[in-house]
Length: 612
Image 1: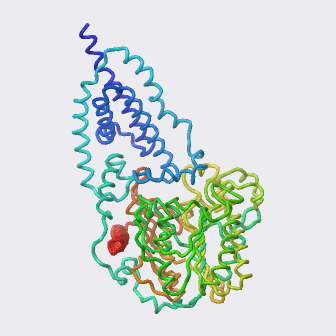
Image 2 (image 1 turned 90 degrees about the horizontal axis):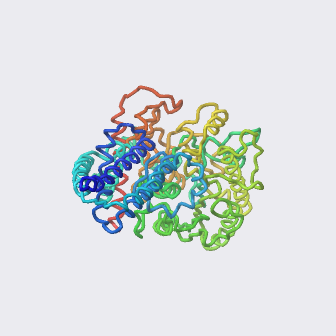
Image 3 (image 1 turned 60 degrees about the vertical axis):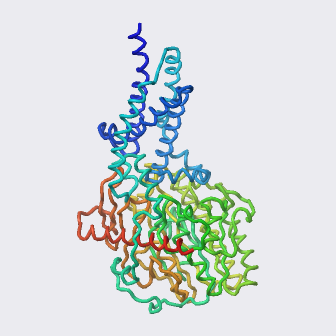
């Protein structure tokens, strides 16, 4: 009888560990495509098993409830990671948990990411209930859980120590190699140091340009310096606008007729890449207003503590401008209640001030936004001789579901109710509102006295929502397979009436270059160092990207290098054709130069914070 009881005592622990291992293994296969049983057993599993065994020992009165709750929370966590990875193509960190309150911003997209097979992650949560009922009737003990915990703890400690010996350049790749929890520990440690891998040495403008392949020339000697001096400034950051939508037709109709018309009085840059991090739209604002790289895994706005940040806004204000920003979103999303005062705006208008009318998606339609800007601008021009207006559109946000009355395109039948078709409709709607706003500037008599910068904040077509049918439609539309080039390049228009007449520049650029280029046109020099440069003057560039490309990736004039990630090996592409090549000439040098530039950007940001 005693032997039977003894067997019953320890059987649940082994069974629960086996079930947990199957769950962890499934997580590794789905997220990292890792099928090595040994790797999962030694690297990933011990940490999760340690938590389970610890619960068995510490929750003595409600042990089974703790086990069930742990299983449930683990299922929820894994589903969140899976969905996040499907959409953003990168593994989320503990930083992203802080952004859960933002979920309504992409709530409509979540439904596009799911699969019926995802519910298998919750299978153990259901099956454990009869086990609880069965073992509760037996004289069950979890005494041996202490020995299991010690064993798993030792293995987990060794794996964690090993993980800390490696540099964390790309989170997804690091998590695959060293364990998901270990990757979080290393990130937390790096974050506690202030700025991970930040350079501690000053780099001159000459040295910075040399790393990009250029010969430095002082801004005041550039041919474009001051050609738009003392003009009003309008920046229109367009949600999810990708470069290939401009100058393209579908079913005989222009997708962006108003932007295409604006090109005639603009200088157009058709090779500018998004460089945002986890903050997405707010990181695009950061890049535009500081010419510094975003944090990457942590939205940059989360690092702000109320200090003033040297910015485009402060520089313009020192030169006689009033400054206003407009975004029809909740000001607390992406902590813009901290971002906008830090950047120095005089007037801040968000959903609190704008009328909640003609709601599309999760905010007022763009026509409400631009009408609001019109009214405020007339008032501001009575107070300020020169105005800077920062306008962030919202309507063309995923999942791109437009009310029928706002669908201005007559799409072919194949595009109806597709993600691509909905995207084109949303871009066409926003383009219409920009066109009406340009007419209003002309009506106010200030169009010819203005500089208008229009650019996209980031891609709209990416991740799991882009189905195989969408990819087929894009291939037919573009004339080639949809590539990372198509995804990451955003349109950039510098409209200066009287100076530009539709010139197109194919110089390689990034969003980090927009602020220096604008200031050069205005004939204004920034007080602090910028990482970007004037796109009109410099033809060569070297760009890094945090978050949407693996760490160590770079984009140069001829090469697009994607470093190894959790699911893909390192790949080198010809940047123009996006076909894979084997050329490794100067590869490591360019990787090192890119990381040096990004680390120096972190150093500048750190210095600015400490100076306050």
